[in-house]
Length: 402
Ligand SMILES: C[S@@+](CC[C@H](N)C(=O)[O-])C[C@H]1O[C@@H](n2cnc3c(N)ncnc32)[C@H](O)[C@@H]1O
Image (cartoon, rainbow, N blue to C red; front, side, top):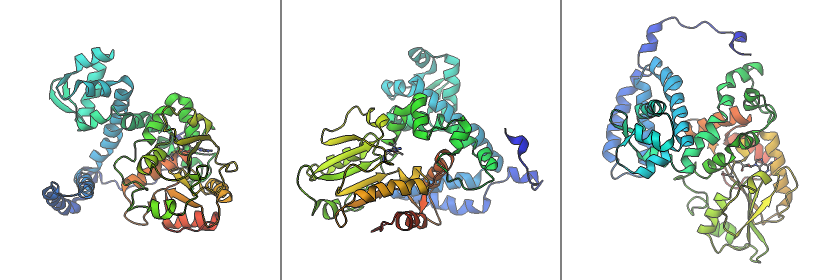
């Protein structure tokens, strides 16, 4: 298995291109944009800050050489993932956060954690060299806001629950693709993750059975932090469209979160709209529902496989968040059919909270997530064209707003 079967095409043999800037001609304008952006940063919005991040990344990429980009990916970034995961698992980031902002010696941290001093020193040196930790002396560091945040399960646990226990699916994708004749994969029973690990399990079962289910769930509760929320009045007018005109009897189902994981979205909804009428119902597979520790009693937990008949009929709204992107169209069609059968015409709505990939100018967060869907699930982040095709043509529902 592997590279021996690959056919490689001839390439230009001018090695000097490897040591010249990636996009030299873009550097002056990007630099100008960054300088202008810095001046606006103090009184700008968070959107201005995000725009600066994009420009700074683009500037660094344009300026560095192909050789530098290659070693950044193949040494720097992958090494950082290893080092950060080590820090999460060993408790390094929690210990550093507990110690506060003072300088911290590797020797003291190693004793506190019960890990080898030399090993910890190597790990921390790389995290620092990648700009994520502050060096104050030899083998002595200070936390950054980033390393402090790694002590939060919502941030730190993503490295283990999403990346390290599934990464072979992503890293072996070229091989999987070659063996499948370089076609876009759309079979949920044949994914690069399954190929790489020699398993028939899907991602959720694989991660859960590998012992990282809680880590994945913590990440799911955190990856959206700071982003606009669907229930913000300027995003979706919950009162006007859902609450006004809803059946107000206490037993009427109001909002059903299908594949709602630990209930973070319904929890947020309940704190934002504590007086919404009817029931809030959280549905997920038994293995997820059983892991729920704390959940507001206002939210009803329900074990449910979304391929089966939807047991909650005629809810005001069915809500599906970051779940359809895990599945190719045929599976989504089946999930949607179960919801459609349960909807009360003229009363029920289906709310789908997912990315819409723009046809041009997509953000790397969206394309990066699409690569995860591709390499772990044989599924995709969809463009508006793909969403219309799925929802209207295949599932027979009408999109009110995209
Ligand atoms: C990517 S997570 C999204 C969770 C949550 N909606 C959110 O946005 O954070 C997908 C969820 O779908 C659930 N799921 C997967 N297969 C399912 C099935 N057959 N029936 C019900 N839920 C399922 C998983 O357990 C997981 O909680």
